[in-house]
Length: 110
Image 1 (cartoon, rainbow, N blue to C red):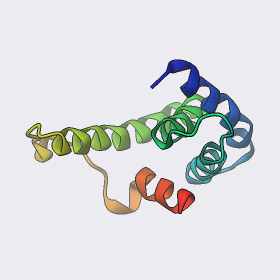
Image 2: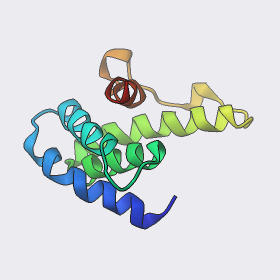
Image 3: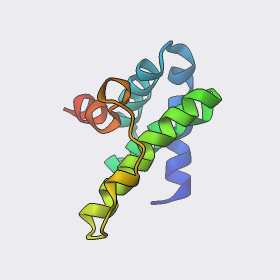
């Protein structure tokens, strides 16, 4: 993944991120914008760019909430790569407090 491509997606998502109210709405708007990017076609870069755009405009409490979600996603990625994970050590919030970034992304690109 190129830093330039990631920056392109983040930059194109920033205007819609500022226009939305809730954190979830900002993610959905950024993901929708990223999924239709005219220059960056790699879905992984689009997904990361949308997250980066929202993260860069988030407040400190929102960043902490996003960090928890990203930590869980990294653990899942490591597990799928064959790395043993101690899920008891992960501090996951209750289901109703999770953002569900992967689920949101799947809904947007469907």
